[in-house]
Length: 437
Image (tube, rainbow, N blue to C red):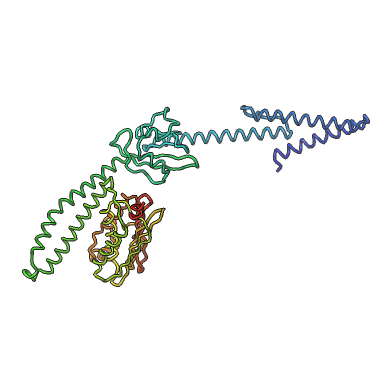
């Protein structure tokens, strides 16, 4: 079935053809065929230009294009534009309703939501942003967010334009309110800043840390007493109880180590600032090699590889504890005759300290949970080796406060590689180069 526009074109063509025949007939009757055709062409062109001018005026005006009752092509084009305008107006009203619905939903959110442009100027914010971030409507619309939320950590984080959340930011309105802030890009030059009140979670976490620290402190004294009395009992005094006493000594030492590891974790969680020191990686690798050799009793091949010139800036005590945990695990879980490699690699982009073993390996489903407290791949194997289940948790926390992370790769029956990955901010030129310059 032909469309309206096709019928309009056909009607206009028939009308134009009829007028052309009339012009030809009139020209033949008046013996002025050329003049008659010229008049016809001029009139047709003038009418077309007049209709085009009117149509252009309709399009450039802000009024809606009116309906046309004619049957020509220009009339049908005018009606088509009118229908398109009506459809566009309906779409606009529908989009506005959806926009208002989304805005109402965002305004009702308990989290602070701030819409930002490329220059981090505020385009819109909900009422929670006023309560949590101290923004005021309408005077803060168009202002720079960093000028309104004055916090050095926040400004540095926003400047980095990272997808990682900013944890534990004090609210500008109330220092007791702690915020978790995230930047979400939703267009090429726009982003949403979402700030959530995590004060209740922070208080619960503090209660948990205090509980663990207090219990650990309370357990340390009785364990020390029990361990001391067990050491005072000579094996030859009660030979029939020697197996029991031996097991008691092992378990008391293990419990003491668990308490010490828990206290270490509590200290790391409460630590806000680092005492930065220069750590010579050559000396550190040598110390780790000696520890591994002593723990191995000559049953493993220990290899060190220094493949980068940089030293490390950080807490020497904490980093040594973390690396020592990785080395101890490698020795414990690698069968006799295996090989353990300690490797340091660094360049201008960052550094990696890795501990590679040829042990039994770890199934892939366990790897994401290895740094959880007391998580064990094999309970019996861990207890036989003397592990507490807290070593990798300590490693994770030490690396976090050094803005680093732990990468774990392992294959069953082949071995494992635990890599501490540092970015460039904690790298130092070798001390010898600094002294010579």
